[in-house]
Length: 516
Image (cartoon, rainbow, N blue to C red):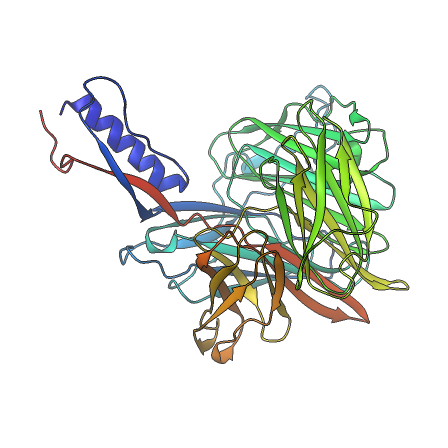
């Protein structure tokens, strides 16, 4: 085998191991020297996660929980750590404001010594896979975090950021899974209305600047704005961009598209409401013809669906609720029509009617890619709290929720097609306890709220790992609840596949020896 062919294969394999989702294919050119066999699932060797700055409230209390499942096939080395990203200087221009030198465009550029600096000392360093590690922060100065993990800590690494805000705009429980950097994000469900304060947080983990466009789409199409074009996010820095500064139009039920022209960022939307609290809105799954939004709490008093079709074609979607007894069609909301390039919002009311539920959206005829999310409200009479659930990928091989307590966590699993069997494992506690596993069967077309297993002798918090055993695709979400002053505070995080392994084809020839 010549050096060029071998170098190409080695480089592609290395990329797959680092990213966790690269795919390799068999060369089909005449005279190809390597024949790919069935792909082997190997653990990823390195991964990155980014956590947004949690709050601007002085009374915010934030906890971070890091967890890596034990994965077969990893070595004994490696480490994981979270460090503070560089912050916007108090003397510099805030994101969304003109610095006088950027043509009116917000840049959020760090000033002085912060520009180009590496993140600071670690704030959270896990000791071993299979056991959660926690760290706490308080007030408005808690920074965004940049995290990396390699070796045995990389496969399935999960970090949960949970914040309690006792009063003020956005009061309640706010939670978000820290996410991997990427180049394209869709957020249906944002707002520029007067009663909402929505920020899109952009965090750059790399050594070079990222250039980002932020686009807004409402009920009549794209909102006019040049302010969101060509935003610069400096290396190792974070910028919260106030969405209402990007347009003069006040609308609820908008869709935000974050498109990275160069580099990569982590992105999440923090939606704060004067009346019904607030939470984080995670990015929707990639545009697809069919979507699942799992884990709507059974006591939801209001559910609002927001959908957007990125292309020119209109989408007609069948709306069904996967309940504990099967798929049902909400009366009066059998279908929803989404015009191409426009955002559609539909109030579904108390669609769950006291039972666990997940929304299942499927095309009525022609399949047109869409993105979607729901805003969920719990409580009544001025004591309400809201959260968001975006469409998500299936659990796949494995998914993890990192921050759970014995009494306040609910695991919701749905099998929209065929029935499925899953194994749920509760990890050791962060301060003590023995792992325990339990198997559940989810009937076809249903959603089941599960009281998750709890580690024996639990001390501290624990992680939940979901692994399908047999049957059809499973979608999941975890709800974390806390009652504060009579307000039913809660936050919901979906459970997509953790992409802890990557498919690497085997070769007919031994590549361990470089042939000349």
